[in-house]
Image (tube, rainbow, N blue to C red; front, side, top):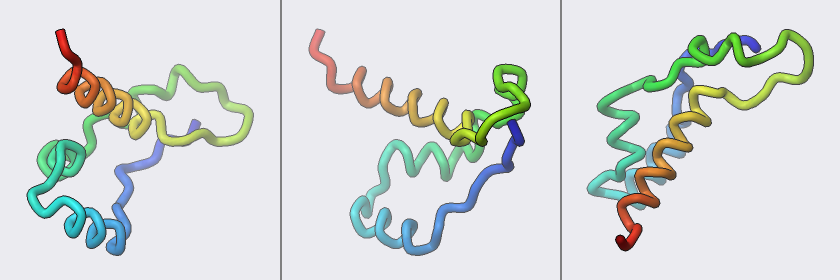
Length: 77
């Protein structure tokens, strides 16, 4: 695995997201307030040295955490 530094959101994506969510969203707030939550370096030992590069494990961990929070927020107990 080749760890990547925090990626930039394309400007067009920022414009569309701000138009769609003028008050923001949980994901937008997490990125704006926290920055990089899960760095790829934290996952380096879990990956081999051969094979095709995968998606950023840090980004996938953040998406998984946000999905859980979204699910928990709407779950009826």
